[in-house]
Length: 209
Length: 209
DNA sequence: ACTATTGCCTGACAATGTCAGGAACTACGA
DNA sequence: TCGTAGTTCCTGACATTGTCAGGCAATAGT
Image: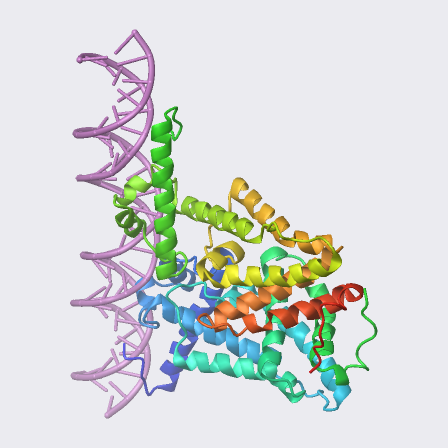
Protein backbone atom coordinates (compact mmCIF):
# COMPACT_ATOMS: atom_id res chain seq x y z
CA UNK A 1 0.00 0.00 0.00
CA UNK A 2 2.33 2.72 -1.15
CA UNK A 3 -0.40 5.26 -1.63
CA UNK A 4 1.29 6.46 -4.83
CA UNK A 5 -0.22 5.56 -8.16
CA UNK A 6 -0.13 6.71 -11.74
CA UNK A 7 -3.64 5.72 -12.53
CA UNK A 8 -6.19 8.49 -12.52
CA UNK A 9 -9.02 6.03 -12.13
CA UNK A 10 -7.47 4.31 -9.18
CA UNK A 11 -6.34 7.57 -7.69
CA UNK A 12 -9.85 8.89 -7.95
CA UNK A 13 -11.25 5.73 -6.42
CA UNK A 14 -8.80 5.93 -3.57
CA UNK A 15 -9.63 9.59 -2.92
CA UNK A 16 -13.30 8.75 -2.89
CA UNK A 17 -12.75 6.04 -0.32
CA UNK A 18 -10.69 8.41 1.81
CA UNK A 19 -13.46 11.00 1.65
CA UNK A 20 -16.02 8.38 2.59
CA UNK A 21 -13.97 7.38 5.60
CA UNK A 22 -13.61 10.99 6.73
CA UNK A 23 -17.32 11.67 6.26
CA UNK A 24 -18.18 8.55 8.24
CA UNK A 25 -15.77 9.67 10.95
CA UNK A 26 -17.53 13.05 11.18
CA UNK A 27 -20.87 11.28 11.55
CA UNK A 28 -19.61 9.01 14.32
CA UNK A 29 -17.91 11.83 16.20
CA UNK A 30 -21.05 13.93 16.03
CA UNK A 31 -23.16 11.02 17.21
CA UNK A 32 -20.87 9.83 20.03
CA UNK A 33 -18.90 12.93 21.04
CA UNK A 34 -15.45 13.84 19.77
CA UNK A 35 -13.10 10.89 19.86
CA UNK A 36 -15.71 8.43 21.11
CA UNK A 37 -15.74 5.90 18.28
CA UNK A 38 -13.82 2.77 17.48
CA UNK A 39 -12.07 1.92 14.26
CA UNK A 40 -14.29 -1.16 14.03
CA UNK A 41 -17.36 1.05 14.23
CA UNK A 42 -15.90 3.30 11.54
CA UNK A 43 -15.03 0.34 9.34
CA UNK A 44 -18.54 -1.02 9.64
CA UNK A 45 -19.98 2.34 8.70
CA UNK A 46 -17.87 2.50 5.54
CA UNK A 47 -18.43 -1.14 4.69
CA UNK A 48 -15.04 -2.68 5.41
CA UNK A 49 -13.06 -4.13 8.28
CA UNK A 50 -11.25 -1.81 10.67
CA UNK A 51 -7.85 -3.16 9.60
CA UNK A 52 -8.56 -2.14 6.03
CA UNK A 53 -8.80 1.48 7.06
CA UNK A 54 -5.09 1.29 7.83
CA UNK A 55 -4.37 1.06 4.14
CA UNK A 56 -5.78 4.61 3.87
CA UNK A 57 -4.76 6.17 7.18
CA UNK A 58 -1.75 5.18 9.20
CA UNK A 59 -3.44 5.74 12.53
CA UNK A 60 -6.57 6.97 14.19
CA UNK A 61 -4.88 10.31 14.75
CA UNK A 62 -4.34 10.64 11.03
CA UNK A 63 -8.10 10.50 10.62
CA UNK A 64 -8.37 13.34 13.11
CA UNK A 65 -5.79 15.18 11.07
CA UNK A 66 -7.85 14.80 7.91
CA UNK A 67 -10.90 16.01 9.80
CA UNK A 68 -8.94 18.96 11.17
CA UNK A 69 -7.92 19.92 7.66
CA UNK A 70 -11.49 19.40 6.43
CA UNK A 71 -12.91 21.60 9.16
CA UNK A 72 -10.47 24.41 8.49
CA UNK A 73 -11.21 24.31 4.78
CA UNK A 74 -14.86 24.72 5.69
CA UNK A 75 -13.92 27.66 7.91
CA UNK A 76 -12.02 29.27 5.03
CA UNK A 77 -15.04 28.86 2.83
CA UNK A 78 -17.29 30.39 5.48
CA UNK A 79 -15.09 33.35 6.27
CA UNK A 80 -13.89 34.11 2.77
CA UNK A 81 -15.07 37.56 1.74
CA UNK A 82 -18.09 37.44 -0.54
CA UNK A 83 -18.23 39.46 -3.72
CA UNK A 84 -20.53 42.15 -2.37
CA UNK A 85 -18.11 43.34 0.30
CA UNK A 86 -17.57 47.06 0.08
CA UNK A 87 -14.51 48.97 1.12
CA UNK A 88 -15.55 52.20 2.80
CA UNK A 89 -15.59 52.71 6.51
CA UNK A 90 -19.25 52.11 7.10
CA UNK A 91 -19.33 48.90 5.17
CA UNK A 92 -16.23 47.70 6.96
CA UNK A 93 -17.94 48.06 10.30
CA UNK A 94 -21.04 46.24 9.20
CA UNK A 95 -18.71 43.64 7.76
CA UNK A 96 -17.17 43.07 11.18
CA UNK A 97 -20.55 42.47 12.75
CA UNK A 98 -21.53 40.11 9.95
CA UNK A 99 -18.20 38.35 10.27
CA UNK A 100 -18.82 37.81 13.96
CA UNK A 101 -22.23 36.34 13.29
CA UNK A 102 -20.81 34.09 10.59
CA UNK A 103 -18.09 32.73 12.81
CA UNK A 104 -20.57 32.15 15.63
CA UNK A 105 -22.87 30.25 13.31
CA UNK A 106 -20.01 28.20 11.92
CA UNK A 107 -18.91 27.07 15.36
CA UNK A 108 -22.27 26.52 17.02
CA UNK A 109 -23.72 24.64 14.08
CA UNK A 110 -21.20 21.85 14.62
CA UNK A 111 -19.85 21.67 18.18
CA UNK A 112 -17.72 18.62 17.46
CA UNK A 113 -15.98 20.44 14.63
CA UNK A 114 -15.49 23.44 16.93
CA UNK A 115 -13.93 21.19 19.56
CA UNK A 116 -11.54 19.63 17.11
CA UNK A 117 -10.47 22.95 15.61
CA UNK A 118 -10.26 25.09 18.72
CA UNK A 119 -9.88 22.90 21.78
CA UNK A 120 -7.47 20.18 22.81
CA UNK A 121 -9.89 17.33 23.29
CA UNK A 122 -7.82 14.49 21.84
CA UNK A 123 -4.74 14.26 24.06
CA UNK A 124 -2.33 12.73 21.57
CA UNK A 125 -3.46 14.56 18.48
CA UNK A 126 -1.47 17.41 17.02
CA UNK A 127 -2.10 18.62 13.48
CA UNK A 128 0.37 17.81 10.74
CA UNK A 129 2.34 20.63 9.15
CA UNK A 130 0.07 20.57 6.13
CA UNK A 131 -3.19 20.85 8.00
CA UNK A 132 -1.74 23.36 10.44
CA UNK A 133 -0.92 25.56 7.46
CA UNK A 134 -4.57 25.37 6.41
CA UNK A 135 -5.57 26.38 9.94
CA UNK A 136 -3.21 29.36 9.76
CA UNK A 137 -4.77 30.38 6.49
CA UNK A 138 -8.24 30.13 7.99
CA UNK A 139 -7.09 32.32 10.89
CA UNK A 140 -5.66 34.94 8.55
CA UNK A 141 -8.76 35.04 6.41
CA UNK A 142 -10.99 35.31 9.46
CA UNK A 143 -9.04 38.25 10.86
CA UNK A 144 -8.47 40.06 7.56
CA UNK A 145 -11.45 42.44 7.92
CA UNK A 146 -10.20 43.47 11.36
CA UNK A 147 -6.71 44.06 10.06
CA UNK A 148 -8.14 46.23 7.32
CA UNK A 149 -9.51 48.43 10.09
CA UNK A 150 -5.96 48.85 11.31
CA UNK A 151 -6.39 46.53 14.30
CA UNK A 152 -3.43 44.43 15.33
CA UNK A 153 -1.63 42.64 18.19
CA UNK A 154 -3.44 42.87 21.49
CA UNK A 155 -6.50 44.42 19.85
CA UNK A 156 -6.98 41.28 17.79
CA UNK A 157 -6.34 39.23 20.91
CA UNK A 158 -9.19 40.97 22.71
CA UNK A 159 -11.55 40.44 19.79
CA UNK A 160 -10.67 36.79 19.34
CA UNK A 161 -11.14 36.27 23.07
CA UNK A 162 -14.61 37.80 23.07
CA UNK A 163 -15.61 35.86 20.00
CA UNK A 164 -14.25 32.60 21.37
CA UNK A 165 -15.98 33.28 24.68
CA UNK A 166 -19.39 33.79 23.15
CA UNK A 167 -19.01 30.60 21.14
CA UNK A 168 -17.59 28.58 23.98
CA UNK A 169 -20.29 29.62 26.44
CA UNK A 170 -23.00 28.96 23.90
CA UNK A 171 -21.77 25.47 23.12
CA UNK A 172 -21.10 24.54 26.73
CA UNK A 173 -24.19 25.96 28.36
CA UNK A 174 -26.96 26.33 25.79
CA UNK A 175 -26.10 23.89 22.99
CA UNK A 176 -29.62 23.76 21.62
CA UNK A 177 -30.45 27.42 21.94
CA UNK A 178 -29.03 30.83 21.04
CA UNK A 179 -28.55 32.53 24.39
CA UNK A 180 -25.08 33.90 23.65
CA UNK A 181 -25.89 34.45 19.97
CA UNK A 182 -28.21 37.24 21.09
CA UNK A 183 -25.21 39.07 22.51
CA UNK A 184 -23.15 39.22 19.34
CA UNK A 185 -24.20 42.65 18.19
CA UNK A 186 -23.77 44.17 21.63
CA UNK A 187 -20.39 42.51 22.03
CA UNK A 188 -19.33 43.70 18.61
CA UNK A 189 -20.28 47.29 19.23
CA UNK A 190 -18.69 47.20 22.68
CA UNK A 191 -15.44 46.02 21.12
CA UNK A 192 -15.51 48.60 18.38
CA UNK A 193 -16.26 51.39 20.83
CA UNK A 194 -13.26 50.27 22.78
CA UNK A 195 -10.87 49.72 19.90
CA UNK A 196 -12.03 51.93 17.01
CA UNK A 197 -13.89 54.76 18.73
CA UNK A 198 -13.34 57.24 15.88
CA UNK A 199 -14.91 54.99 13.29
CA UNK A 200 -18.03 53.76 14.95
CA UNK A 201 -20.44 56.62 15.11
CA UNK A 202 -22.53 55.51 12.14
CA UNK A 203 -22.91 51.94 13.43
CA UNK A 204 -23.65 52.56 17.07
CA UNK A 205 -27.22 53.42 17.80
CA UNK A 206 -27.03 53.76 21.54
CA UNK A 207 -26.20 50.94 23.92
CA UNK A 208 -26.54 52.39 27.38
CA UNK A 209 -28.00 50.28 30.13
CA UNK B 1 -17.35 -3.70 49.19
CA UNK B 2 -20.30 -1.88 50.60
CA UNK B 3 -18.37 1.27 51.27
CA UNK B 4 -20.31 1.74 54.50
CA UNK B 5 -18.55 1.17 57.77
CA UNK B 6 -18.99 2.06 61.42
CA UNK B 7 -15.33 2.20 62.15
CA UNK B 8 -13.78 5.61 62.26
CA UNK B 9 -10.34 4.19 61.80
CA UNK B 10 -11.30 2.19 58.73
CA UNK B 11 -13.42 5.01 57.41
CA UNK B 12 -10.49 7.36 57.73
CA UNK B 13 -8.20 4.87 56.06
CA UNK B 14 -10.63 4.46 53.23
CA UNK B 15 -10.99 8.21 52.73
CA UNK B 16 -7.23 8.57 52.70
CA UNK B 17 -6.92 5.94 50.00
CA UNK B 18 -9.66 7.62 47.97
CA UNK B 19 -7.83 10.94 48.26
CA UNK B 20 -4.58 9.32 47.22
CA UNK B 21 -6.24 7.84 44.17
CA UNK B 22 -7.74 11.20 43.17
CA UNK B 23 -4.44 13.00 43.70
CA UNK B 24 -2.64 10.40 41.60
CA UNK B 25 -5.30 10.81 38.92
CA UNK B 26 -4.70 14.57 38.85
CA UNK B 27 -0.98 13.96 38.42
CA UNK B 28 -1.48 11.53 35.56
CA UNK B 29 -4.01 13.73 33.79
CA UNK B 30 -1.69 16.72 34.05
CA UNK B 31 1.22 14.67 32.78
CA UNK B 32 -0.60 12.93 29.90
CA UNK B 33 -3.45 15.28 29.00
CA UNK B 34 -7.00 15.01 30.29
CA UNK B 35 -8.29 11.47 30.07
CA UNK B 36 -5.05 10.02 28.74
CA UNK B 37 -4.21 7.52 31.44
CA UNK B 38 -5.01 3.89 32.10
CA UNK B 39 -6.38 2.41 35.29
CA UNK B 40 -3.29 0.19 35.40
CA UNK B 41 -1.09 3.25 35.31
CA UNK B 42 -3.17 4.82 38.07
CA UNK B 43 -3.03 1.64 40.14
CA UNK B 44 0.72 1.47 39.81
CA UNK B 45 1.03 5.09 40.89
CA UNK B 46 -1.01 4.44 44.05
CA UNK B 47 0.68 1.12 44.75
CA UNK B 48 -2.05 -1.36 43.93
CA UNK B 49 -3.48 -3.25 40.99
CA UNK B 50 -5.96 -1.52 38.67
CA UNK B 51 -8.74 -3.92 39.68
CA UNK B 52 -8.37 -2.87 43.32
CA UNK B 53 -9.31 0.68 42.42
CA UNK B 54 -12.78 -0.65 41.64
CA UNK B 55 -13.35 -1.23 45.31
CA UNK B 56 -13.13 2.56 45.74
CA UNK B 57 -14.62 3.84 42.49
CA UNK B 58 -17.17 2.04 40.43
CA UNK B 59 -15.77 3.23 37.13
CA UNK B 60 -13.20 5.45 35.54
CA UNK B 61 -15.87 8.11 35.10
CA UNK B 62 -16.47 8.09 38.83
CA UNK B 63 -12.85 9.14 39.24
CA UNK B 64 -13.50 12.02 36.86
CA UNK B 65 -16.52 12.87 38.97
CA UNK B 66 -14.42 13.04 42.11
CA UNK B 67 -11.93 15.22 40.30
CA UNK B 68 -14.74 17.47 39.03
CA UNK B 69 -15.98 17.91 42.57
CA UNK B 70 -12.43 18.49 43.79
CA UNK B 71 -11.80 21.15 41.16
CA UNK B 72 -15.02 23.00 41.93
CA UNK B 73 -14.26 23.00 45.65
CA UNK B 74 -10.93 24.59 44.75
CA UNK B 75 -12.78 27.17 42.66
CA UNK B 76 -15.07 27.96 45.57
CA UNK B 77 -12.06 28.45 47.78
CA UNK B 78 -10.44 30.71 45.21
CA UNK B 79 -13.49 32.85 44.52
CA UNK B 80 -14.83 33.04 48.04
CA UNK B 81 -14.80 36.65 49.22
CA UNK B 82 -11.88 37.44 51.49
CA UNK B 83 -12.33 39.26 54.78
CA UNK B 84 -11.08 42.62 53.55
CA UNK B 85 -13.80 43.08 50.94
CA UNK B 86 -15.53 46.39 51.29
CA UNK B 87 -19.05 47.24 50.31
CA UNK B 88 -19.16 50.66 48.76
CA UNK B 89 -19.30 51.30 45.07
CA UNK B 90 -15.65 52.00 44.51
CA UNK B 91 -14.47 48.90 46.29
CA UNK B 92 -17.02 46.83 44.43
CA UNK B 93 -15.55 47.85 41.13
CA UNK B 94 -12.03 47.08 42.15
CA UNK B 95 -13.35 43.81 43.47
CA UNK B 96 -14.65 42.91 40.03
CA UNK B 97 -11.27 43.50 38.45
CA UNK B 98 -9.56 41.45 41.15
CA UNK B 99 -12.15 38.73 40.73
CA UNK B 100 -11.42 38.55 37.04
CA UNK B 101 -7.74 38.25 37.66
CA UNK B 102 -8.29 35.55 40.26
CA UNK B 103 -10.46 33.49 37.98
CA UNK B 104 -7.95 33.83 35.16
CA UNK B 105 -5.16 32.70 37.41
CA UNK B 106 -7.19 29.77 38.71
CA UNK B 107 -7.90 28.50 35.21
CA UNK B 108 -4.57 29.09 33.54
CA UNK B 109 -2.55 27.67 36.42
CA UNK B 110 -4.06 24.25 35.77
CA UNK B 111 -5.31 23.75 32.20
CA UNK B 112 -6.36 20.17 32.78
CA UNK B 113 -8.56 21.25 35.67
CA UNK B 114 -10.00 24.01 33.49
CA UNK B 115 -10.79 21.48 30.77
CA UNK B 116 -12.54 19.14 33.16
CA UNK B 117 -14.60 21.89 34.77
CA UNK B 118 -15.50 23.96 31.75
CA UNK B 119 -15.19 21.89 28.59
CA UNK B 120 -16.61 18.60 27.46
CA UNK B 121 -13.42 16.70 26.88
CA UNK B 122 -14.45 13.29 28.20
CA UNK B 123 -17.31 12.17 25.96
CA UNK B 124 -19.11 9.86 28.36
CA UNK B 125 -18.58 11.82 31.53
CA UNK B 126 -21.37 13.83 33.10
CA UNK B 127 -21.12 15.06 36.68
CA UNK B 128 -23.19 13.39 39.36
CA UNK B 129 -25.95 15.37 41.07
CA UNK B 130 -23.76 15.92 44.08
CA UNK B 131 -20.77 17.31 42.24
CA UNK B 132 -22.97 19.30 39.89
CA UNK B 133 -24.42 21.01 42.96
CA UNK B 134 -20.89 21.95 44.00
CA UNK B 135 -20.29 23.37 40.53
CA UNK B 136 -23.48 25.42 40.82
CA UNK B 137 -22.30 26.75 44.13
CA UNK B 138 -18.94 27.70 42.63
CA UNK B 139 -20.75 29.51 39.82
CA UNK B 140 -22.93 31.43 42.25
CA UNK B 141 -20.01 32.43 44.43
CA UNK B 142 -18.01 33.52 41.39
CA UNK B 143 -20.81 35.72 40.11
CA UNK B 144 -21.92 37.13 43.45
CA UNK B 145 -19.86 40.36 43.20
CA UNK B 146 -21.40 41.07 39.80
CA UNK B 147 -24.88 40.46 41.09
CA UNK B 148 -24.19 42.87 43.93
CA UNK B 149 -23.63 45.49 41.25
CA UNK B 150 -27.13 44.83 40.02
CA UNK B 151 -26.00 42.87 36.97
CA UNK B 152 -28.14 39.96 35.81
CA UNK B 153 -29.27 37.83 32.88
CA UNK B 154 -27.66 38.74 29.61
CA UNK B 155 -25.23 41.10 31.32
CA UNK B 156 -23.78 38.20 33.27
CA UNK B 157 -23.75 36.20 30.06
CA UNK B 158 -21.62 38.82 28.36
CA UNK B 159 -19.20 38.96 31.26
CA UNK B 160 -18.85 35.21 31.56
CA UNK B 161 -18.27 35.00 27.82
CA UNK B 162 -15.47 37.57 27.90
CA UNK B 163 -13.89 35.93 30.89
CA UNK B 164 -14.14 32.47 29.38
CA UNK B 165 -12.75 33.79 26.13
CA UNK B 166 -9.65 35.30 27.71
CA UNK B 167 -8.98 32.08 29.59
CA UNK B 168 -9.71 29.82 26.66
CA UNK B 169 -7.49 31.75 24.25
CA UNK B 170 -4.69 31.91 26.80
CA UNK B 171 -4.75 28.17 27.44
CA UNK B 172 -5.10 27.21 23.77
CA UNK B 173 -2.64 29.63 22.23
CA UNK B 174 -0.12 30.74 24.84
CA UNK B 175 -0.13 28.06 27.52
CA UNK B 176 3.26 28.99 28.92
CA UNK B 177 2.87 32.74 28.74
CA UNK B 178 0.45 35.49 29.75
CA UNK B 179 -0.59 37.06 26.46
CA UNK B 180 -4.31 37.25 27.25
CA UNK B 181 -3.70 37.87 30.92
CA UNK B 182 -2.40 41.29 29.93
CA UNK B 183 -5.84 42.12 28.58
CA UNK B 184 -7.81 41.47 31.75
CA UNK B 185 -7.93 45.01 33.03
CA UNK B 186 -8.84 46.45 29.66
CA UNK B 187 -11.51 43.82 29.16
CA UNK B 188 -12.88 44.46 32.63
CA UNK B 189 -13.13 48.19 32.16
CA UNK B 190 -14.61 47.74 28.71
CA UNK B 191 -17.32 45.53 30.18
CA UNK B 192 -18.05 47.88 33.03
CA UNK B 193 -18.25 50.87 30.71
CA UNK B 194 -20.75 48.93 28.68
CA UNK B 195 -22.81 47.52 31.53
CA UNK B 196 -22.42 49.88 34.50
CA UNK B 197 -21.59 53.22 32.94
CA UNK B 198 -22.86 55.26 35.88
CA UNK B 199 -20.64 53.51 38.36
CA UNK B 200 -17.31 53.44 36.70
CA UNK B 201 -15.95 56.95 36.67
CA UNK B 202 -13.59 56.46 39.63
CA UNK B 203 -12.09 53.24 38.22
CA UNK B 204 -11.56 54.18 34.59
CA UNK B 205 -8.43 56.18 33.96
CA UNK B 206 -8.74 56.53 30.22
CA UNK B 207 -8.60 53.67 27.75
CA UNK B 208 -8.82 55.23 24.35
CA UNK B 209 -6.74 53.84 21.55
C1' DA C 1 -1.29 -13.53 -21.32
C1' DC C 2 1.62 -12.40 -17.65
C1' DT C 3 3.11 -9.49 -13.95
C1' DA C 4 2.60 -5.82 -10.69
C1' DT C 5 -0.42 -3.18 -7.94
C1' DT C 6 -4.48 -2.38 -5.32
C1' DG C 7 -8.08 -3.32 -2.10
C1' DC C 8 -9.83 -5.77 0.82
C1' DC C 9 -9.75 -10.02 4.00
C1' DT C 10 -8.40 -13.24 8.09
C1' DG C 11 -5.61 -13.90 12.03
C1' DA C 12 -3.31 -12.18 15.71
C1' DC C 13 -1.29 -9.37 19.51
C1' DA C 14 -0.77 -5.99 23.31
C1' DA C 15 -3.31 -2.70 25.86
C1' DT C 16 -7.52 -1.31 28.25
C1' DG C 17 -11.82 -1.10 31.36
C1' DT C 18 -13.90 -3.95 34.32
C1' DC C 19 -15.94 -8.26 36.54
C1' DA C 20 -15.63 -12.51 39.63
C1' DG C 21 -13.75 -15.08 43.22
C1' DG C 22 -10.67 -15.51 47.01
C1' DA C 23 -6.83 -15.00 50.57
C1' DA C 24 -4.90 -12.27 54.19
C1' DC C 25 -5.64 -8.83 57.41
C1' DT C 26 -8.42 -5.94 60.57
C1' DA C 27 -12.33 -4.78 63.45
C1' DC C 28 -16.02 -6.09 66.35
C1' DG C 29 -18.72 -8.65 69.66
C1' DA C 30 -19.28 -12.45 72.92
C1' DT D 1 -9.10 -14.60 73.61
C1' DC D 2 -11.62 -16.49 69.95
C1' DG D 3 -14.82 -16.61 66.19
C1' DT D 4 -17.08 -14.08 62.72
C1' DA D 5 -17.85 -10.32 59.66
C1' DG D 6 -15.95 -6.79 57.05
C1' DT D 7 -12.16 -4.72 54.47
C1' DT D 8 -8.35 -4.59 51.37
C1' DC D 9 -5.98 -6.11 48.34
C1' DC D 10 -4.76 -10.05 44.97
C1' DT D 11 -5.06 -13.36 40.75
C1' DG D 12 -7.53 -14.73 36.79
C1' DA D 13 -10.29 -13.67 33.19
C1' DC D 14 -13.16 -11.48 29.55
C1' DA D 15 -14.72 -8.28 25.88
C1' DT D 16 -13.20 -4.41 23.48
C1' DT D 17 -9.79 -1.53 21.12
C1' DG D 18 -5.80 0.15 18.04
C1' DT D 19 -2.94 -1.81 14.98
C1' DC D 20 0.34 -5.15 12.61
C1' DA D 21 1.37 -9.17 9.36
C1' DG D 22 0.37 -12.06 5.70
C1' DG D 23 -2.41 -13.33 1.85
C1' DC D 24 -6.02 -13.74 -1.85
C1' DA D 25 -8.92 -11.89 -5.49
C1' DA D 26 -9.59 -8.22 -8.55
C1' DT D 27 -7.74 -4.60 -11.31
C1' DA D 28 -4.26 -2.15 -14.00
C1' DG D 29 -0.25 -2.02 -16.98
C1' DT D 30 2.80 -3.92 -20.48
